[in-house]
Amino acid sequence: MAELPEKLDKSGEMEMLAQAFAAFSEASAKLEQKYSIIEEEAKKLREEVEEKNLQLSKLSSLLESVLNNSNSCVLAADDSGVILVKNPVAECFITELGTDAFTSMLNMHRESGVFDHEEDGRTFRISVGRLENLEQKGYVYVIDDVTHIKQLETERQRDEKLVLMGEMAANIAHEIRNPLGSIELFASLLERDLKNDESGTKLTRSIVKGVRTINSIISNILLFTKEIKLEPQNRFVADIVDDVVLYLQHLMKEKNIRFINRINEEHVVRCDTELCKQVVMNIVHNAIEAVPEGGMIVIESFSEPERSGFTVTDNGSGISESMRKKLFIPFQTTKAKGTGLGLAIVYKILKAHSGQISVESDGATHTKFIVEFPV
Ligand SMILES: Nc1ncnc2c1ncn2[C@@H]1O[C@H](COP(=O)(O)OP(=O)(O)OP(=O)(O)O)[C@@H](O)[C@H]1O
Ligand SMILES: [Mg+2]
Image (cartoon, rainbow, N blue to C red):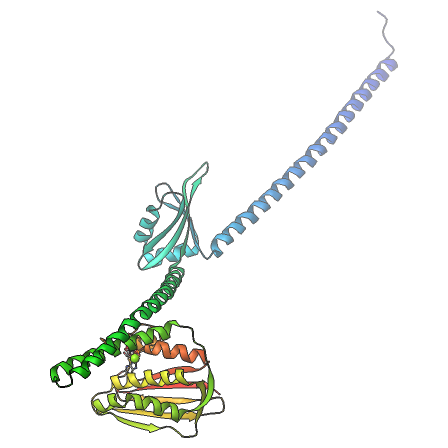
């Protein structure tokens, strides 16, 4: 076999090497290209993961702040009653009610729905929802203290009842009035026929007295329930007081009461005359009932640029602080035979005049009512 010349042999090797090197370079360039694509994709994926993580942490901090800033108690408990998560309001409730009471409250409500729960004199509105995910099963609770709302609801219902009662009372009062008038008339006629029979006259007088008492209660109920229509005039306080005193003087005499009238003859109030008389009458009547035998009642007037009116002071039993708070609410009385409407009517009349009534008392020895009308 003929031998290749040494020169040719070497150049062939060189060429093969060059080819191999070229192939290697090409492969390496391709590899580099692939690598940079992969690197690019990895970078994108990394960015996406970072973005998702950011969104997740934003969402979780939003949820956390929603939970923490909620005014309601929010918590989740698993099926065995273990609390999984709770917000600060829930912690407050647990501290206030005690762990045992709180846990037993949750355990009593293990179905979806809304429940009102009474605990410790408070009302809690509990909204329960089922919690079910891969890891946990239990309930989500949203709890609110609705004691105040419940009270308002009760008050509204009571007001509605009062209005209905008022309407009913007004109807009944009307119906009673007519036969009552006849009873009074017949008793007066009987009294006249029995004028020589002392014990008979005494009985008929009692009937008339009883009828008048019922009549005045009925008048009060009617006055309280009916709408007030004012016919305001400028009137001397002295005239109004004199009329009322005339009507009440026999009661004052019976109790030997010293009535001191310090009304200034020139003082005027702008009011509906009959209603203003009713105001004076109720206040002075209460004073008469409050003072002891031989007690004292003082009535004084005042007249200022923006208001005028009068004060009634007595040295009676005084009004306790708890009674003072509810004095003008209907049917509040400490008297066996009182209806508790007198001052409620006074209040209503003064409100209709845009006037005011206030009371000062030490709760034991004296009481002063201050009545003022706008000028
Ligand atoms: N001058 C007073 N001194 C002490 N207590 C008073 C006085 N005025 C009112 N009160 C108290 O306020 C309550 C309410 O008075 P109000 O006139 O509204 O009703 P009443 O007098 O009890 O009954 P009514 O006037 O309907 O017959 C009284 O029961 C009494 O306890
Ligand atoms: Mg009274």
